[in-house]
View 1 (tube, rainbow, N blue to C red):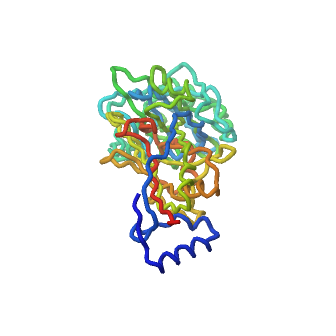
View 2: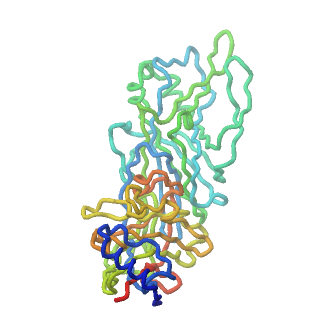
Length: 466
C-alpha cells in the first residue's frame, strides 16, 4: 500500500467534500494516485465461481436460427433443429392444368454466425414434415420437442460450411430463357418429388384456398443435421429464417398444353400467419460438466459457460465486506479479470464476447450499474468490457459502480452471472437474456484455479488518513 502526502489545502478540500457528500454515487470517481490518500490495489478478494445450467430460451421470432450437430471436447454433444411453417403465396393458389413437377428446393439462407468445424466435417441436413402445425400464439422454448414424421422428404450433404461464398443458381423466367444468377450464401435442399406431387401439385384445391387451410394441410417442415461421424466435430451454422424471402420452398413445374413452359412458385418461411421454433439440446455425459452439475456445492478449478441454453457461471464475492474494515474508502476502479483455462481455446476459439449481469432478490436478471444507461455511472459498452483479448487470453469487466454499491449498502449481493453473448450489444435489455444468437463456449479458471488462470477481482481504492 502506498501513502501519498497532500498539501494542506488539498487535504481540507478532500475532507470537506467527503463530509458534504450525500450522494453515494459520487464515490468511486477516478483519483489521481499523485493526489490520492492512502491509495492501494487489492486483488485478494475471494471469488467464488460455479457452473450452473442456463435458463431455457424463447425461440419464436429469433433473429437467426441454429441448425447443427456439434461434438465439443469439453462439453459433449449439442444438437439444434428447427420447425418452420410455410407461407401460402396467394389465396386460391392453382398450379394449372396438366402440371408436371420439375424440382422442389428448400432454400435456407445463411446468417452471419457459425461455430465448429467448417472445413473437414461433412454435414447431412435432413427434412421431415411436422406432425402438428405451429401456433403463432404459443410460446415455444428450446426444450420443447417438435414431433415430426418418420419419412424423410429431403436431404443435402454439405462438405464445407461457407457463410461468405455466393452461389450460382439457374433462375427460371416465365416466357423467357432461363438465366444464371448469383445469390446470397445458402443451402439448397432438394425435396422428394413424391412428397411434392402428393401434397402440392396433385393435392385438392381447397388446401390452397386460404392460409389457414394451407397451414392445416402442410403443417410445416422439420430441419436438422444428422449425427456427425468419422471422428469429426461438426458444428452449428445459423440461418436467416426471418427476413422476407430469404429462406423458402421453391417449386419448379411445367404445364403441358399447346406449349410447354416452366413455372415456379415460392412458399416463404415466417410471416404473420406462420411461425418458426427451434430446439436446442445438450448432452454432457462423460464430461466434467456433468460432474459439476451433479455436485453444485463443490467449487472446482475451472468453470464453463455455453450459449444456446447451455451453461452459465455464477460468481459471488463472499468476503467483499472486508474492504469496509479499511475505513473510509473510495473505489477508483474494480475489475473482474477472467482467464481462459489453458488448452481450452483449441481447436475452437472462446466466445468473442461475454456478458456479465446481476440478479435481484427474485432472481430476475438486471444490468449492473456500470452497464445500465439509466444509471448516472454508466460507462459505455466499450468501457464495461467483456470482449475476448486473444493476446492475454482474458476477459475483463469494469465493476466499479457495482462494488461501490455493495460497500456503501446501496445494494445487496445476490449473484453475478457470466455467459457468452453476441458481439453486437446495441440492445442492452436483450443482451442479458440467454443467448440464442451464438453457439460458442468459454472455459474459465475459477477462483480456486492456479495462479495462471485464477479468476480475480482487482480493486483500486483510496483511503483518507485518520
